[in-house]
Image (cartoon, rainbow, N blue to C red; front, top):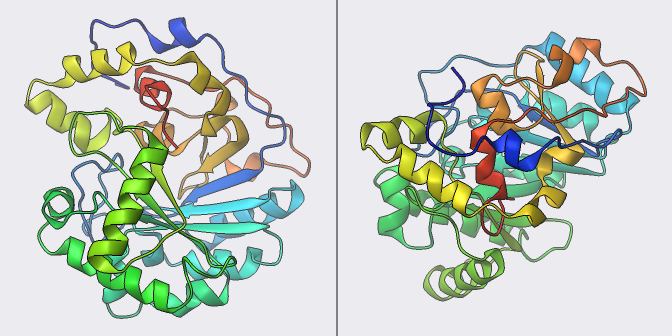
Length: 310
């Protein structure tokens, strides 16, 4: 079941057909569900108990598809992607072909044994670091006690390595609001985060990206359990902004799961809503035509509400 029924206008009825581009620039690869954290807003319900991880045969198919179809950006996510067996393998095999490689990290993983920040710098990785808030109490409420301090330690180490200063070492933060609320204006939030983190912690970064909490995964379970699901869905629909349809991330990317299945985005991936024709990475031939109608459901209101979701 894709989503709990609620009294709102179906997203497909309001947004109509959304067509992707034929030659997407970004390949996002969700390589594992393993994670050292179990965040309340995680749409994939990742944790230490999860075992799903991309194998090397699938990784090789990803590498070939990336090379033969002119992708420019490799966006690696999870879980904590660093925990995957193929994390370094993908980067080492595509660093000479990708214009940019993004790694989405929870930061705290780098305080555990066997995880090396130098690998990111050596490969000019653009870091997208999740930080629920600039204040300790609110961040720990989402991530667990002590996680904010761990994140700050790693952000400072990244700054010492040149991240946030060197134009070739970009450090971005990703913000999710706590609970069933919408994020504010992204630029205003970025300015606030920059001011407070610089003043309070001596931390600098390049850009902040705000992400609306999607009514799926752990958040959906919490919304249903607290009888807030209908209210939140109505809030998302009420904030629907047609202008956001022009800049949806699904227009210019494909999202590949650990088993090679292809989705339009990581949120669709999390609920098993596959891209048209149930594609798998093994089906992707050189110069493949990726033009398709985006698969959508009511959770897509999250990306079109208010100021949009990066």
